[in-house]
Amino acid sequence: MGIRWARLSTGLKMLLILSVGLLPLGIIAVIASVDNARANRAKAEVEARAQLAVHAQRLSIALTRNSFTIRAARDAIIEAPDPAGICKRTLDRLGRFPNTSGRFALYGEQPTPRCVTAGFIPPPVPRPPAGEIGVPVIRPDGNLFQIFMFDPNGAIEGIAEYRRETLASIVDTPHVVGNFSLELVQDGHVMPLRAGDPGGTLSREIVTDYPFGYNRFVMRLRTHIPPLTLTEAVVILMPVLMWLWASLVGWIIVQRLLLQPLRRIQQGISAYKPGDRGLDLPTVRTPAHEIGALGEAFNKVTHTVARHEAELEEAVVRQTRLVREVHHRVKNNLQVVASLLNLHSRGSPNEQVAAAYASIQRRVDALAVVHRNHYAELEENRGVALKPLVSELAANLRATAPASAAGMQIRLDIGAFYATQDAAVSVAFLVTEIVEFGMLCGADLVSVVLEGEDAGHARLSIEAAALAAPVDCDAALADRFDRIVTGLARQLRSTLERDLERGRYSVLVGVVGGDE
Image 1 (cartoon, helix red, strand yellow):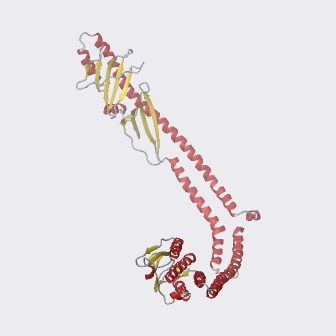
Image 2 (cartoon, one colour; image 1 turned 30 degrees about the vertical axis):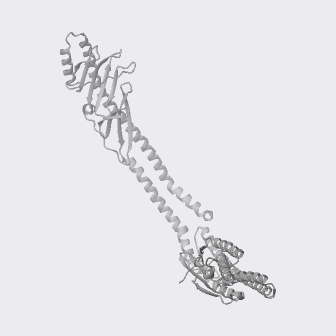
Image 3 (cartoon, one colour; image 1 turned 120 degrees about the vertical axis):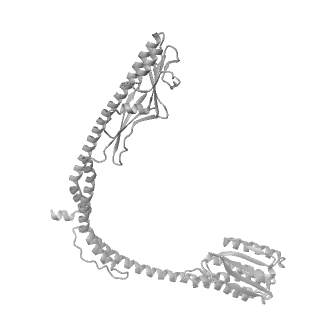
């Protein structure tokens, strides 16, 4: 048995122990709660119906007694030659015990009242529903209750009006002890007759209705089951006891089978440092063989991670060398192309062809400069440094300037900014195009400035007096120059700004660093 138990998984062991430990408490809690709910609900409903029947009977007797008196007096009024005495005696009788005091109006054969309580103005008489001889009405404010009495032919016999306080006294006399409320309800109009204390948060409300007057209004009783009875207290405390018992059993199981072994494994893992050859785990003795398997898995993982880290380091070194070699070869190839273009330019007898070779050479030099500077910043991966890029580019441009521009100067004011390779290529070509255009148009001085504009941007400005309008240069060359620099500005995702009075071109460049 012990061997079979040891082979079970930890989760199954916890499930079996908790199920056996909590089964008796669970059965007791279910039986107690079901029995308590049924008994309390049934008892409360029976008591509520009995109380409602008693109070409804009181109201019914009081109203019926007055109705009989009014109907009998109406017949006497019709037959008497002088009904004044009958009216006085009837109204006096309606105001004496056991009758219910109120205000009344008695009618004869005519639709006008013959007897009226002093100060009482009869309300308009509604049309009775077919076959009904009484129409009860609760006024919207809930303070008056009126009964319109009709004969079988639909003629009005009398009107009785009672105040809320009068009906409340009738219903609750003699007083019945209990926490319940009574009210008359008709079409959303409510007349409170007795107020009960609101139940607590744990109480349950029971609502019972008793219909009156051909179901035209009801007497409603509201009561609450006490929030705490002995059975309910047991039901409330039972889940707490179950929780405490489950917590104790669960804590013992988890502490013995999981936490202590895992804590020892955690100490061994915390002592492990990257670069160690293996994971030195302590010997763990626990019925949960999964914990031991977890320790072995960690040991295997550390060996695997160490091996993969070594492989990744070697791969990174190889990749770095490969990228450096690629940039180096691209730079060398561009320099070879630039040298070949230079040889062709010098050996060409045609000045226009030589100028074309020189123009192409300057653009190839611009690309070579970008690759050389990108190669230099490859280790730190900050991007291409624009200051050495533009400086080297300006030196190449002065070296390849035609004889007519041999005396042209290039003044630089470049901040320490870095840009991506794509942005650096566009900047190199833009500087090359504008400076070359200044060479061909007779510029004596070209000023190149790169200064910070805002976070993430710097402004590149190139200015030459010879570029101011009107430009004394070939129209076709000027048109081609304008299209090229506009396209390069678009590659920088910016707009080329031209100040033709000063001969100044400027554009925003996205940068990843600035002056320190």
